[in-house]
Image (cartoon, rainbow, N blue to C red; front, side, top):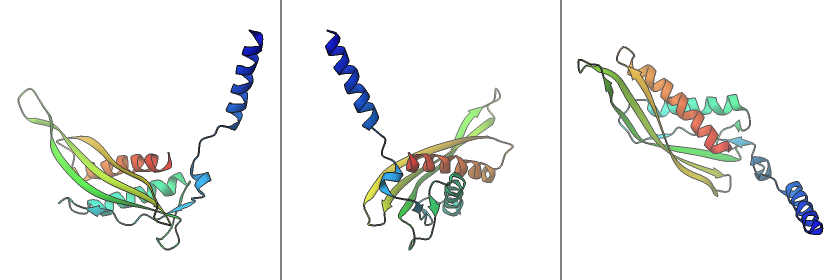
Length: 155
């Protein structure tokens, strides 16, 4: 019986030492290009705000260097599929209290040979009160979405 425990323990040690998570280091990807996202909504300038926010997130994170398309080892494209603004809550007199804005984005992440490494749709929302502007809310929503994009691509 002790012999069996020894081999189980020994096997776990060997497997534990050889197993690792394959990340970007194994793919040798050190840079990314982020062209302006395609805006399929009627929300004005959403594509430029979101793209800038995504690029800023990658720069701040510093794991992938942001380069132009011709020099980058990978490319991240995005399509803004949906933008919604709707009432979220009312006060006791049936006046609008809060709004909810939501954005849905389709991401495609490829290596320089064109091989798709990731294809995914992401959705984020942000709540804001009646006394706030929708423009400031869109900025906050883009910031929130950019962190989701970064996390999705890096992890």
